[in-house]
Length: 77
Image 1: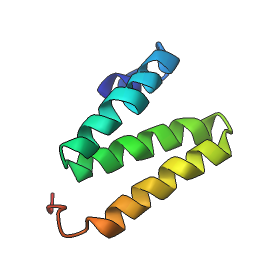
Image 2: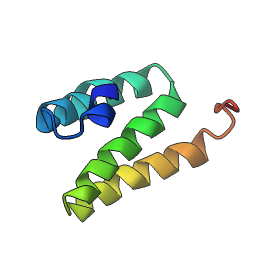
Image 3: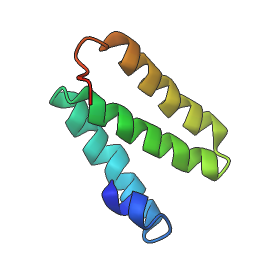
Image 4: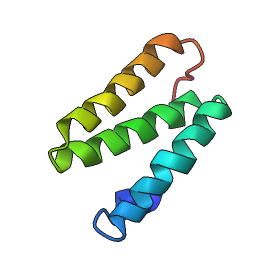
């Protein structure tokens, strides 16, 4: 995820696929909802940037539902 933030054009599709298929499920499985939500928003931002609005909306929706459903598990930063 850090590489996608630092170098958004470098191997973007490969990094995005890794975030979608490996990192997001990992955070969800391990209950790290803060990082899970950040990863969902990052992928949503990518899709929005490239005008894939339906895909972006799906990731943003999941991120907002995660925030609503797990608000007690989030810690203040």
